[in-house]
Image (cartoon, rainbow, N blue to C red):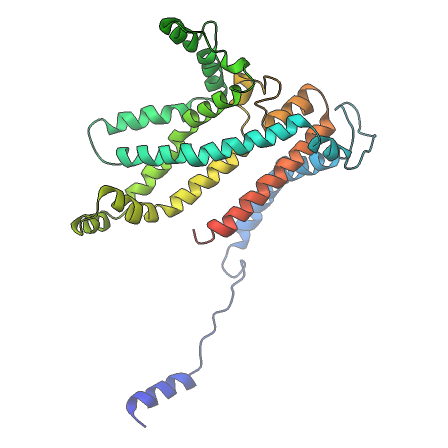
Length: 311
């Protein structure tokens, strides 16, 4: 037997150390858990778990919000909900917002991030300008753009008067109002995604790009085969934020159109507010909340499990 074989046999016969799980008590973390976990669980239960349970419970009743709900209707609220044309339009609008966010907003953010990621004179000012719409409050942005779209006194009216053409009443047109909302959504949130991509580009190894340039790669080839793959985790995160944010869109739509005209710009959350709060149909509004919760949770966990499991 050679020395190498003997050494290998000795190692195989040697007792192997076993790594055992150490409980929080053994690691000295039990006092920390006792101190900080109960308050966090209490707050989470009071402000998340209990409201979710109450919404699910109220969705089984026909209730106007006063007194105690007594008229049990089972799943009738959900039946009425999915037979409601306004809610169907809200689902379509949420889908349109997601599509526009993925196909227009995120590519625009990547393009601007590629231009503003380099240290050039004035780059900080341009980053600030493009990021300012996201910092602006959603309600304020909706009111500003409502004035811009106004066909009597807004910016569109002034431009139409200057050009000598008929003034378009965009927000009063059932077919055009949703496109006006989509334009404001892109303007409002692309700066957030741009900053995500700028942060991701700053972590890209410059030597890899220099090697690709030495090999003769063009600017598009460097982006397609080097930069974009290295940004894949940031892209997945940006897509996740865009989808969840599109499903929860509310503050921007209410001051801009209020869901009108004729429910053409309703989203699921504005529909919930209109019917559950304004019209005091709390049971129907709670059913909308349950549907929205199920959609968001399913998409969130499904997306993270499929696309972000390695991030």
